[in-house]
Amino acid sequence: MLMLLMVSVVNAKGHRNQQKKEDKKFEKAMEDFQMEAVMKTTKGDITFFLYPEAAPKNVANFVFLAKNDFYNGLKFFRVVPNGLVQGGDPAENGTGTTGYLIPDEIKKWLNFDVEGILAMSNSGPNTNSSQFFITMQAMKELNGKYTIIGGIKSREDLSILRTLRENDKILNIDIKGKKIDKFLDYFPDEVSEWESKLKKPSNQ
Image (tube, rainbow, N blue to C red; front, side):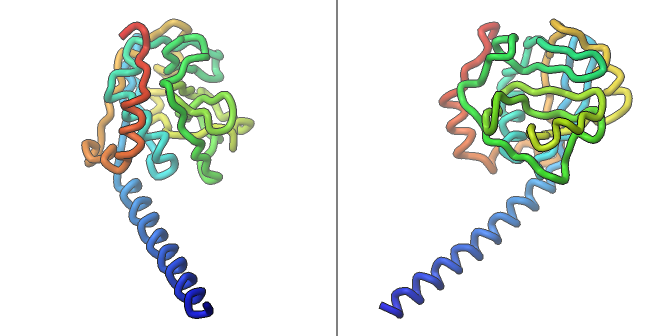
């Protein structure tokens, strides 16, 4: 009995060590992707750096939706002047989803202390889907509440962002970067689920 217990403990420890190695390998892979999203809008192009090292599943979902043209033609349905813009909703009224949800990936070291943050909207913990918002100023009151997936690339992009108004549209989101074609290969189970559940907007 004692020998059996010792073997179980050793096996469990070995499994934990193997899992840690796999986690570190995954984290390194995410850091190696240098990804950008070019959001083409009716007011011009806005480019963001994406942060898969901080929110891998949420970035993967955003990339998956962009590659499937989910965002094409959707309106920015909410604009708070000098505050934020919100889009990505297939219902265009704040109630729409993709048909599935993504859990939160909130990091203490990544926050809303600067303008131009791209983050996932939610209706509570672990309810991320397709909706996102972009801040036009520092909004520290949002820290710890929303998953950040990217940040604006330049002051020029921020200037275009500030011209957006309600009913302006996303024409297309183009994902660019190093080894980008291999990115979604790290999420085979998730992509399979998303493909089976995805509900495309009615305008497509």
